[in-house]
Length: 173
Image 1 (cartoon, one colour):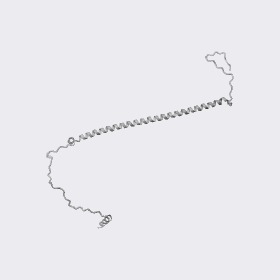
Image 2 (cartoon, helix red, strand yellow):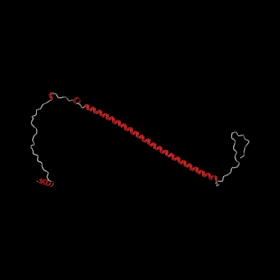
Image 3 (cartoon, helix red, strand yellow):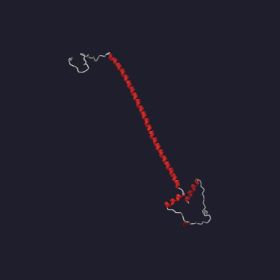
Image 4 (cartoon, one colour):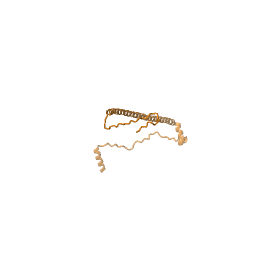
């Protein structure tokens, strides 16, 4: 390459000189420095692998920790929902018991004699008896129990074999 030094350079940095000769590398030649570099590179790679392994373990522990925390939070939310349901059911039970108590009181108040008479008049059309509707009956003071005209005969139970024989004999008579 011919060098052209006479041209003016507009940039602020000086131009780089290119070497006239570039050495060619032998691909089969192993240098001592490359062996040292390879050992250092192996050490660096093993350290990098160890660091990556530690990072992976830390990430695994974090994921497990977050999963446990999520599980705890989810379970607590389920407990809160069930607790709210129980409280609602207890409130409903209390309301129903209050209504039952009020109904019992109203039933007890409605069972007095004046209320029964009023309902009998209004709903059923019943009236009190007057003197024309009453009939008096006189009964003699004698006893109305009559003695039994028939005599009751109690048969004694016969032994098993004698009873069977007697029933067979009575059939053929």
